[in-house]
Image (cartoon, rainbow, N blue to C red):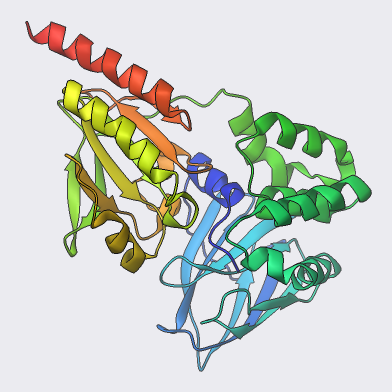
Length: 344
């Protein structure tokens, strides 16, 4: 499977994390998995139940697990990840479902999902478009999903494909139009509520006084207090070419203002990250968030795509949070000037 999708990231940024016991409660579903070549022998299970987000580590015994989830009165997305926060499999579950996962956990897209009609049709779509899922350029997969939605507007799989596998979520108007074209019965609120909450623009911006990020072989506490900061959050898999243009604009900002600039890789590929930044002649720090946008320090930012830019003021309040580099730079300059004036 691919790395965690924008839809999953929206859920994790908008809802309160809640670990819960799964024994003897109503509206239960069951997950059985048989996974080969998984080291260490445990997986991370994430889903939204009626009370909040369940996010827990589940051990395997000889590559097998049997897990019971609870309080899922409506269809919800279940995500299973490995220790590197790579997605092993997605499934849609609701009360009474018995979902099965099996395959080689060391190979991308190799874990198959069965057990319910919806998940089996989703698996069939993945299998039929395997080359598109493996392609670093998501345009062919996006086109296939758009075609499916256009032909299957009464099918819940259309909603699932759009919110989980579709990549171009930055074109919010187009996504909204596709989502509205799907019938009400095929787009339950339990799957769409987090996306719609983000789309409404009613989410208040948070205060982020510090982040805990990886640098030089250890996690470090990165303070965002006392100065205007611009964070450039990126993924190498999609932005290695476009990165040069972003870096050049941030160089100009760093050279002509007192704004603190830092970049944060938000994917698990640390080896290629090291090679990419090796030639950077920049006057700022490079950090790494191994868990991606799900990282505990980053969840409040609600990252839905990359590159992503966050500006915080001297109190750690987020002044800008989004995909527009020019707007981020403009706001960073304004906040920095205000802070400079306040000191005199």
